[in-house]
Length: 131
Image (cartoon, rainbow, N blue to C red):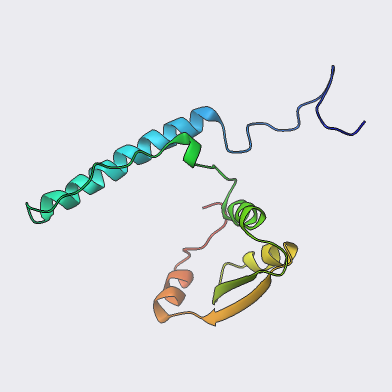
């Protein structure tokens, strides 16, 4: 039948696991753990010497998902976190493909005016797919 379990001769349709390749997840999580640790250490060095700072929390491969770009990430977040009829609030102007993704998930979209700062960032090209 159509159970999708795959039998003899079944063709795998995924190139990698849904969360990303284990090697990539491991490499990126190690990098982020090191980068966040260094950033936290730099912050502690400039802070009051009596200030306690807990050790950095490691970024684990299990806590990450690698996407194929911002649109894929928004789609995955909508699939995992929303139900049809939920409300999403977006800043205007917003990422040009976001509205279609939200509509595909049958979400109610409410736009709010952006700030001058956010409009300048958008004009500078800060929201590009695949960048």
